[in-house]
Length: 173
Image 1 (cartoon, rainbow, N blue to C red):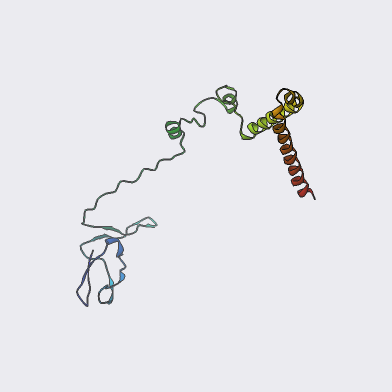
Image 2: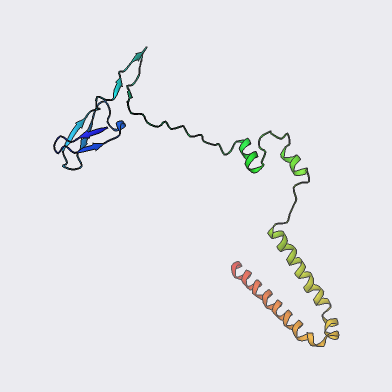
């Protein structure tokens, strides 16, 4: 809609939907004068119709042809068809298998987690130190130069053991 200021005759372009049938208070951006603008006569207005007890609101029909926007189609990202197509997941009865059947199928591999591997590693290290402790004298007799290294290794293990015990005792007191 084209508006003309009454004071300075400046012209403004305003969307048709901004001016309602009851009018709107507008202000000139140039001179600052204010006036109430009503819709122009080139827009046809449909009068209110009453159907039974229901009164229909007024509808504006404009002469201007505007581009018709197609409504957006929203994709539901959680439909079983979409999940099957995109990720290969089957949800909700498309496959007549239950969770127990899937678990017992043998296709799922049971793997160790981090703590399982850590536990196995600690058992392995303790076993190696135990075997080394049992065979310490035999190794020293066969390789006399290794006596210093083995004694240092056991001193370090004792220091670590004492440190851990002291650390635990600090929180117990």
